[in-house]
Structures are given as structure tokens and as C-alpha cells.
Length: 220
Ligand code: URA
Ligand code: SF4
Image (cartoon, rainbow, N blue to C red; front, top):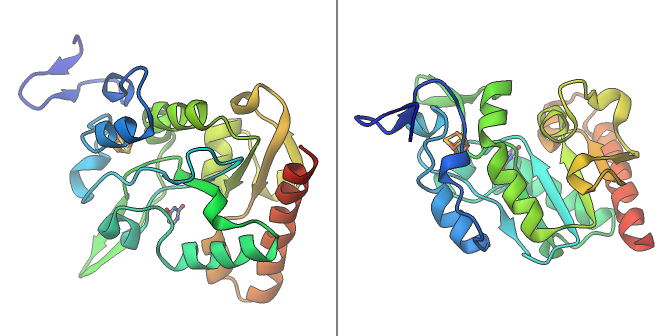
């Protein structure tokens, strides 16, 4: 392919997962292919690609930012502290986590090494754009009725860089990812609850937003 250096098989200029995404693949084949994605430099420092997991026929897809330390070690999304909190919030909102599919806007963990600790770094717009073909492929196969964007990165990935979680959370928004229909609900990232001083209030806000998604599912 043009634009590649054969020595490293890395794209020279463009960051994109596109050449790695198989056509007409099912979710398992996508997951296998994503394991070898070199579409941007994030694969170098991380241990593995963390692809989406869950019910392939899910009516609800949850989109996070990127895997964290635990997810990078275990190879599954939302298995760390934020994921445990998310499961609790989903259940409280009347959504069975087992009936959802969970994924991330970016599929490798981006971090800064500080001593033994790996500190999360937000992905750049360029990295988000590079990884987008995986998310598009997942969404087009699962074809969910409702999508929940967890936090600003997921919101920007799905709705564009103008997205503001503080202004647009907790309502049914139109998304190109859902044929323009108002079936996307954005909320805060569950890790924002873990960082908050007034945890209880912030958690209740997350649950309230998830209830909007539950209501959409109920009325679909
Ligand atoms: N935070 C995310 O956005 N995604 C995960 O998978 C875990 C933590
Ligand atoms: Fe590929 Fe996405 Fe990983 Fe970049 S972050 S290497 S585009 S899977």
C-alpha cells in the first residue's frame, strides 16, 4: 500500500485503522484483526488491543474513551474500577449489563509511565480518528437502537469535536451513527464519579442520564 514503510509496516503520514479492518467480517473476525492493528502509534506502548465485548445483538451499545490500566492487562473493556461503577449504575437505571455491548472510541491504552505507575493520557483527535473505523464496524454490525456515549471523548468521537458533555448530557441526541435519529444519550465518564468530591451526587447524575437511555429502549 502506498504511504507505508515496509520496514515497520507503519503508515507514514496517515493515522488510520482502515487498512486493518476486514470487509464483511463478523465481530469475532473484527476482534482478531484488531489485535494486530498498527493504525496509529498507540499500539507500541500498550500490551494489547482492547476490543468491544458483550452481546452481539445488543439493543444498547456503550462507548467509553479508551482502555485503562486494568483493561490493558486483561484485554476487556471496563473491567477496572470505572467498569464496576458503571455496572452498578446501569443496574440501578434498569439496564442489565449482560444485555449491552461495551466498547471504546480508542482501542489501545494511552499512558505516561511514572515510576511503576501508568498514568492515563487522553487520546488526541488524530488517534480518535485513526481508531474510528473499528467503532464504525462494530456499530454497523450490532446496529443498536440506542447508544450511550460515556464522557467527552466518546461524545466527540460520535458527534464531532463541538460536543460538550456539560451542555448535552442526559438527552436524546441525533447521531449520524444512528442514521441521524435522536437515539444517542451522552453522559459523564464513570471515572469522573470516582474522582469527584461529591461522589454521591455525581453518581446520581450518571444514573439519571442512563435512565434516559433506558426510557428510549423502553419506548423503542
Ligand atoms: N475507561 C474507559 O473509557 N474505557 C474502559 O474500557 C475503561 C475505563
Ligand atoms: Fe489501531 Fe486504534 Fe490501536 Fe491506534 S488505537 S493502533 S488505530 S486499534
